[in-house]
Amino acid sequence: MNERILWADDEIDLLKPHILFLQGKGYDVVTTNSGAEALDLIEDERFDIVFLDENMPGLTGVETLERIKSKFPALPVVMITKSEEETIMNDAIGSNISDYLIKPVNPNQILLAVKKNLENRKLVSEKTSMAYQREFREIGSRLSVSLDFDEWTEIFKQLVHWELELSRSQNESLRDIFLMQKGEANNVFARFVKENYIPWLKGQTEKKPVLSHTLFREKCLPIIKKQNKTFLIIIDNLRFDQWKVIRPRIEEMYRLVNEEVYCGILPTATQYARNAFFAGLLPGEIQKRFPKYWVRERDEGARNQYEKELLEEQIKRLGGGVSFHYHKILNLTAGKKLSQTLNDYLDKQLNVLVYNFVDMLSHSRTEMEVIKELADDEAAYRSLTVSWFDHSPLLDIIRQLADKKIPVIITTDHGSVLVHNPTKVVGDKNTNTNLRYKTGKNLQYDTKEVFEIKNPEDAYLPRDHVSANFIFALENRFFAYPNNYNYYVNYYRNTFQHGGVSLDEMMVPFVYLTPK
Image (cartoon, rainbow, N blue to C red):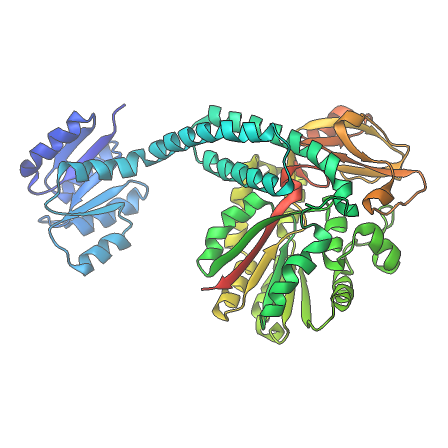
């Protein structure tokens, strides 16, 4: 069915050449010479776009526009006028016009306005598809050679870019091809981590990434020492693609200085990765040096309740001299309270803010049917993140910091992955419950489907039992027990989990911003 255009102009007979031009391009054009008749036509027929003369007798163009928008807010309207008066432009723009043209107009201007409003998404989708098809081959060839972490960072950023672009595309088959390529990338990345992870920790390789336990020392502290005041915001479980979709909101207030990816340690879980960040130590080292600050897997109690104390210890080891406040936001009420009392905490050089919403969102999506329906795939999950951020106290806090010209660091402890494929594991009653990593004694599993660390000390992990080891799920797998297997698999398939080895869990954002 051809797109239908309604053109309202009291001198419509003079526009016959333009109308014939549009009809020659395949559009159906209906004409009228009054605003009142235009409203009647819109009530009775379907139109895809309206061209509206601003200066008509009776109902003016602006008055007609207001009435159209009150009933059909999504209908694109292009205002056409002889006048260049600013007040008329402001009235039209304030009524949500889609475009604004000044007479005399030529046919190509009209055609461009139509294409911008009716075919823009299709044209962008086609261009995106062609560009990805060109880059698909380049990414594929790079995955076939040996890569270091910096090269993996480049590929990961490419993949995130195309994931965001293709999520807006109408080409479903190309999105499926992308998911296959991302799956291949995760498979190769898993092999890369299995080969390099322990050598990174032991310093046996020259080229190793910044890791959770070195992030504060290597990236945060140099920034903090240069500034009178800095806000360090850790948004728990924030993936790189989620950062990308909230970035435009923040860039309205801040200038992006640095946007990097660092590597979260294993397990990619809060207890391990975030404690390592605050302590500047790996989990096994924390357990040995500060046993009172480490809660074992089988023990009851919050596992991240000593972050402030661990950061104090790390700052002392690094020479001291940095005063700070520490805040942890676990709910909306606490976020609003900090937003309202922010001025009370600006007397220190550093403010550390742990914001926990995204982690709660991923867990809620597993447990609550309504969240599952709202975020049933990656794109919807990102959209829900944006919606939360737009209405969160965190955005208000960042606005206040921008007004006060305070630089901001935004980072996270780990990401998450949408899991699809179960892998069986057997353990005793003391085995932990996480779906992406297991630690315990006498674990039984398929070695081809996991990254196993038989000796936890090799990876600086705590050992809760003399025969305990660690296993990590790879790519988009999740662990399932043979007992009640089908129920377990159906319940957890297509949920967001973390703790294992994947690009989205391990390659996470570190961002430095300065106020505009």
